[in-house]
Length: 251
Image (cartoon, rainbow, N blue to C red; front, top):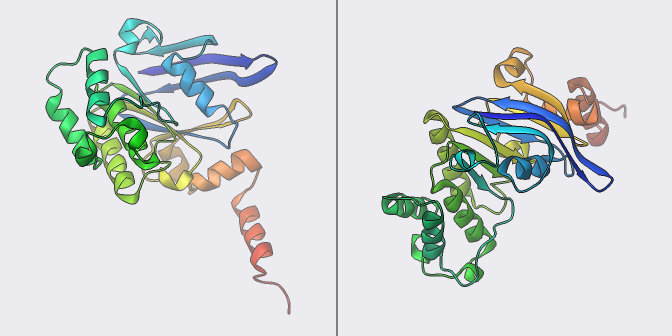
């Protein structure tokens, strides 16, 4: 459903993404992990078509910048880009018209209710708290019911109820056969959601692992992440914790 083939992106002399490739299947949740500056947001923006790049990205078999691909892909950016002079409800209407949606009113109201925005529907974009802006950001990304959904740090700024609802939404979308790519650096927020993890560091893919492969190795996602990004093995982590806490030291 989503194929990233040998994508490279430079900003001047800076190599932000270096020959990145991965393929995501329908009905799967892939977690894109990496420390700050790993290239996660760059690859997300390349997939959605915001950036020029070398390589190839296919969405449903079509090049990512074609109208056919754009109709089936949705994006929830890390930082909400709202219009200060549009209300919550008007944002939803604006997006629905941009996508030429029909019979969307019930879905619009259901999304606003799910993320506790119904009573704020007449508030303007610049009147919303950061948490409410992120909730509206999610509603806008989900309204068109895309087949491929990119979520860039979607849980930052959300309250516990909204995080719970987002996790439930992600699981429902997976069951419906949607393809989801969730970029984050907060491992705990996605530990129960993923089918595949792609770990990036320094612009490169350092690991591309299915959940069942990791389970067979009796490793957690956190263990894999630190092995890949810091070269720490489980015994190294245990020793590091012992050193910091003083456990096991002679007295």
